[in-house]
Image 1: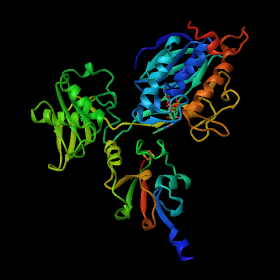
Image 2 (image 1 turned 30 degrees about the vertical axis):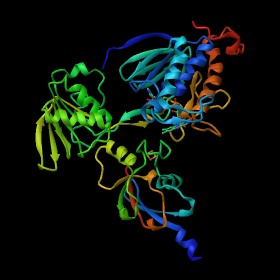
Image 3 (image 1 turned 120 degrees about the horizontal axis):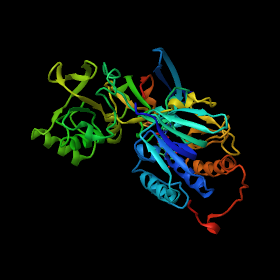
Length: 340
Length: 110
Ligand SMILES: Cc1cc2nc3c(=O)[nH]c(=O)nc-3n(C[C@H](O)[C@H](O)[C@H](O)COP(=O)(O)OP(=O)(O)OC[C@H]3O[C@@H](n4cnc5c(N)ncnc54)[C@H](O)[C@@H]3O)c2cc1C
Ligand code: FES
């Protein structure tokens, strides 16, 4: 675990950088409130970038059709004048309310954020890696087993085994071939459904001896003494064999789980946080929930509805950030967007 | 009377504690198995709404596989992503319920 990183106080901490969390920055910025976003994923966009970057969306006002990733890119452009801070690849594990009402948010990597208002835009929850059923997998997590490659440099010269048949398994195999000491890709089938060009490249690299490709194979057991050293593979050709490995990285995609949000003292009904439909506040003062994570009578899990919720939530949050000031409603057409 | 009866099919489901339950569905509703399971109160997320993009609706088909249409490329793409698949795993959202599927037996894995 990292040492505690203190982050200067921010007005609003937003958990989740999906479309709704991103747009909350805009609505907050119009009211001169600064934001810090945290997301467990390594990138912004939530479900749009993770599940359907290349699918068209047809119900965003003003866009007869827009791709998932394009909407994310536009949102990032739209909020950039307000200079939000981002922490990616970290999951918020705990939220504590101080005596003065302010909140302290701590991530799994020990990043600490102190804020006046917390906005939970956690969608369907944290995207977590799908974990295959392999003996010893959990025992070696962080000791050779990881599910994401944050810094490829840490794999330089090492003996790396990847598993999976999707785009990310293929892409990383190609990428790591030049960095790692040895790369082995283990795949259950014999065809790859990722990009045909990259699959072709992987087959060529295997033929040329640049990587090892084990088809019709599954990793079944991990061994090591404190750190991963070997893994057992079962294949169609051979009943089983053992190969050495410093790192094992199963890449089977991500799936959302509500995760730690349920433990923060908020009401939770069927994986959703009930809110007041007047301002999307939760049962705890200064904590708001917007987007797919909240529920109220008539709730629809739509991007459009999430956007609307952020406008009302930020108007309501203003009193906690500027207790001395009176909020006057202004159109962006009249005042433009004044940055800080 | 007879025609009404043949509209009604039974799907057998092995739930989390390994018990078999039966769900009766009118095929005229034109539901997918994912939608039927959700409507029946089973813990199926169906995050992507049924477009083979999330695999939260995966089921293992234990009996009746021969009555299902073959998986499309898109379904296979998604299934290929999942670890440790039992042999007859399908995405329930890609199975449109039809009269011939009476007695289908599935286990929830998604
Ligand atoms: C296939 C598909 C098609 C869709 N089509 C449409 C459509 O056409 N129109 C439409 O309006 N909607 C559509 N939706 C729904 C839409 O994508 C969601 O309503 C929208 O993504 C909700 O945005 P959000 O910001 O609330 O949450 P999300 O997009 O889910 O983002 C939440 C983020 O919070 C992060 N997070 C959660 N908990 C934590 C934590 N503890 N710490 C750190 N980070 C955390 C997650 O990693 C995630 O990135 C579709 C959804 C899917 C899956
Ligand atoms: S509901 Fe998403 S794949 Fe079936």
